[in-house]
Image (cartoon, rainbow over all chains, first blue to last red; front, side, top):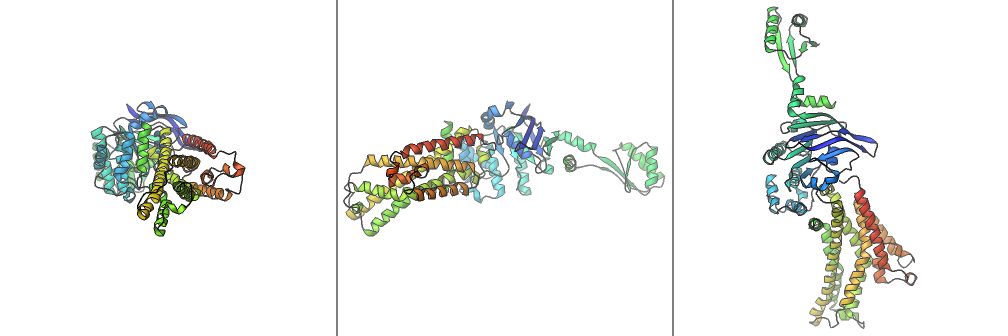
Length: 300
Length: 255
């Protein structure tokens, strides 16, 4: 069951420059889906298309299993969003900004206090939002997105401009919303490290193409597949002979020998053989590529 | 119902805004000048001398100072300020992701501009009445003797309001189209100044949508005797609104 699916979504600026090419997003209901990609990869364009802020050119967009164009109002009634920088009326206070949305969504007035409490802005009083810090503006934008208790939250780089503490708070808030209210969250970022601790699913976009999509488990699997072993000894040539004798394929990288990850017993056996041949063993290690390196490899 | 909710929401945005202050100050400015003038000189409406009705004389005197330049100028500024509020605060994208049909967003915004104009008329007329009543109460210790010309008062207000519509619609159109605040203000002021130069010098000045408010008070010259400026106001108003609406609906990028 998916909250968002797109089929071959393609978008060209001025009808020429292709910004998105055949994007097939699948955001499972109840997931926190991290939409990753470097700056200019097409994340914001995709999210703006999903919300109807850009006119769709090619492909299909289905949200809650309904075609977006024909069901725009019904879909937006159940969707909260934050696209790029905060959208706030600078001359009004936090409460007044929320009151504007309260009138549109026709939710109960007490909801204003509720959402302000959720984002920790209940004590801002009559201070106009123009005088808020970027972090406060970002949190108020989240409050606006939560005003009508949406089923789906679409957030474009919500941690932009936040300090490390703010990033942690935002992460905890999104996890809490997902866990307690079962909210599906699609969150974009250009930093994997920023969202890897929070998301259940991930989609990686680069140069307008979706190059990976799956669960975090699948991404970890890819990480495992890219791990390798490293032997560093006092005699490279003799060590190569030992490895050949054991039928192990390897590559020489300077004074190190790299090979796929071996069984525990085989590692011990090779170590014993090296020592018996008077070869000094300085290092036997498993080198794991972190997710960030995988992300960088994918978007290269 | 959705339109009413949307209008309420749009009206909230004008609270404490520059446009609402402009409306209040602009509406009371000229009447206040007259009031101060009367009080400073110890005069009342009787200053107008041998006229048919001192209220009528005062009404035209106060409005005349207003309609030629300050009223169109105020309309240009207020319409641009309200419409451009979304560009200035980067809020078009927020507005367009609310569950409202585009036509509701469009009309709610324009109705609020009309509402602000009516509010301006209210402040102005209140100021006009007080600028007549207060000096009489202070100097003569009584209300002015003359009968208040209700019918003429409402008819003239209505006519002036109709002449405001093309200016409102044109400024709305430009403000929706251009992100830069200076464009609607610049275009509006340029057209207004050009019109004011041409009024009285060009027989076809009625072609300018900015000419109708001044012509209401200055009177249409003999060369324009067949021209109904109120009909022209309505034609322009409808044309500009249709263009605005089509342009807004067809905009590929909505924030």
